[in-house]
Length: 336
Image: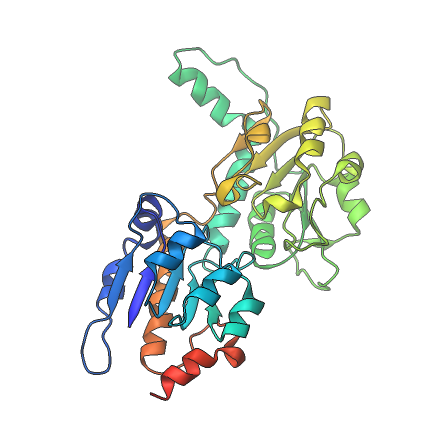
């Protein structure tokens, strides 16, 4: 089996470096080691470059910045599986992969604690201007005593009560915040939060976390109307997907003071990083898509693909496959 890992050197070291030896230890049933091929460039590959580099490979282990485009699946007749080393598969054309008989699978949701903790960290920085004071000190300036605001007793609003939202609710409640949740698909949020209509959440929340899934229906959900409904001087924290925010509307809300502060880990720039327009604003605290970048999560997600490849060697359908029924190439491989 030939496995191509798309991660560029920086991402390989950050996300896959510790799992790479484990991958190389995998062997075929006859004891022969599998062949692991790495990205030969010091950057992300374009799809044509990936097609050339992964020619003859059975499996692609794809970093989140590597899309699974239609021409990829058409051009690699040997490809059995496209394993996304992340949970998000929105840039993978699953329908085309299925039509070509290629399996698509995703990583485990091990990022939840790390991402929720970063959301809390962004909120703390927004509330107490930690980064601004640190920058002043490092630049040799004496920081002014910027007044902050206490989070205990304030109201947090979470839009979307999935894995991250439910975990974050516990963290926020743990520091004494009142937590409101709006999610049309959820009927029970336990004792740490309270369900609310969207209008109530926006008008009462001192900080809002949009954590809805990125779909055509939720694109630009945080628009001018949304922001106008928010409590004046509230804070917005986005660790979910950049597509949820209308960047121009958010920038205008920062300029007018409708938003007191903005915390971002995601955006519309490359690799879902915050857009420079917002990240550079004096009221914004931004990180370059670091939500899942902890050793615990990186190892778990990378090891997800090692586990999945081990399953394929054992003639088993990998866990977290999204189109197992149409993966005819893999099923044909199992019969050999």
